[in-house]
Image (cartoon, rainbow over all chains, first blue to last red):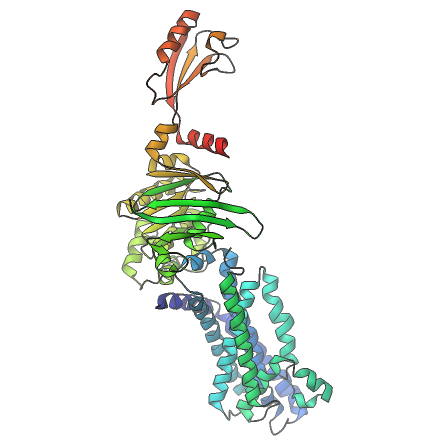
Length: 255
Length: 308
């Protein structure tokens, strides 16, 4: 069966138009908050902390800060994208259109992941203004960034379908993702924790993302890069399975 | 007669246990204007939703232009345009962008020329670059119609299209519906304004409590169920209906000044002559008389009451 590429393009274009309209919220605020982190932790406090491994503290936190924005923006963009039509009622059009679930996901998640990638690149550029850093494995860096953006946009899509109010839309990024990211080694190396908490940290999926991402920059990591990628792929597969379930049953989309 | 939509044994039970549709069979003929009438909560919107893919049927099959809407949903849905009852539009998009979006969503290559023609036909061209949220309610309704027609469907569903719409838009809309029908588009509409169905529709279906009560050519329905009434305004009011007239389809008005006689317009014997002779015998004199035909609305109300 041929794909309805016009529909994928329409959804993608619609979402990207929304992105351009809300450029300030979409780009400016994450870039601003990341800059603040660099000023406080990188320059002011970081200068007194010294290096972790061979990496200065300011450079050390860059991958974690990019991940912090990438995760929350992927989720909020994708969840908002599918939640809004449900909220305003315009979802009728998507449901009555000759669009398969795969095409709908491709449009919404593709747009959300694109926005996240743009944002991630902007944060890296911003970081360069504050801290000199190098990227040892640029291809792996982009691959991890892309994998994370797609995975968490899928996760966001699920949240957007599940949410039946604005509170629910925000509760997961706020109550789950932010704590996991802060505790996932954005600002410290897991090896700095006591052995017990090191074990606990391994249950935090974000540890694998940040560790893998940091490896692509500096060649050092808390956990093996293979395990990092494996865990991210596992989460991706889980998200795909949940989306498959949503689409098979029409959960919260079709009556 | 080739049917463009064919519904067989359709049931829909919502998660709450509410049975919105009960074993519905329905055929819509190619090119006709079909009016679906029914009181609130009768299942009209659920039935339309099931055909358009918004509601998942519990049981039954639906074909649109020969395509099964479940297994061959792409081909089926590409033929169908839907204007739902509720106003739901993208606030921040421009009129032209939102209508072009719909065309893409339904799998058609962009066609600025067609979109322009559509917007001009719906008197929206002046507003093409306006954001949808700045439009009045009536204009938003036009935008929704434009979206439904953006992919050049051959079947158009209008769910209560004229609810809460001003006179001018209603007139424009019916003109547009007539034009569409002339161009071969099959139109299925639900409406509360029964006189519109009476004026526009080729066939009429009545649905109540999830069941289709009847589907009939409008003319046949009117003839079969239509009743004529003869009203006689009396010279002097009567205290009560004379016993000689009881047992006949004659009613006395509350103030005693008028007699209403109901008869079958299709019958051989209307009985009017007999009635008038008897009134003469009784010495009941009348000032004036008029006859009237029951409207579709009367038919509809009596049908729903009778069978519900």
